[in-house]
View 1 (cartoon, rainbow, N blue to C red):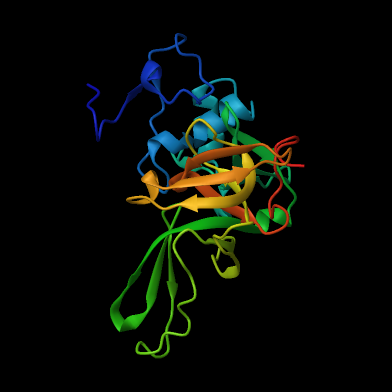
View 2: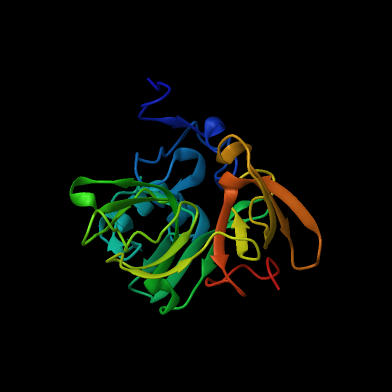
Length: 253
């Protein structure tokens, strides 16, 4: 019996609207396993393989090829068909040499963008918050659930603590070394990862701080000069002058 919260099963009618599954074809859908991305912002690997990439006709076929280790997510083989794939994750098919990145996309919520092997070697990841751990080292808690430890030589003078919440780190895959940092600031290029403006891209022109990120408003200017607003919590920096990742055609020019 399906239960709310920690239930094992998910009815198709209750699945997120952006999942590309037929609502009335069957009663049940694959429920993503708890992992790096929440249910409302992720897609099970099985759905990616069967319904997006069309590499299997049935769930049984998809489960089989996934269990054989034919897919990597962020550089690591994933054999769990329930593994949750979320924004900015890189999917690799070693047998064919194909690479994709899951990016936000207007109205449809997400798009599986083909990318090059070189681009598949890194991933932008937003800093959600940061804490000080034993020894005075800094732990960065990231958008995709991972934690990155920044070691500090002198806790009384932590010169290494140069990262701020909402900054985007460019990390290497799969070893998650920090390659670069994109600061959250006016003039930076950002993509929206939630809300009615999901997938839109623009430059930050103003930030109105409120009580917490969800009540803070960010005003952005799109490539055609129009402006729009969204919650600070939905803003994800992807570049200074131009995007560091490949975006779907027409999203940013």
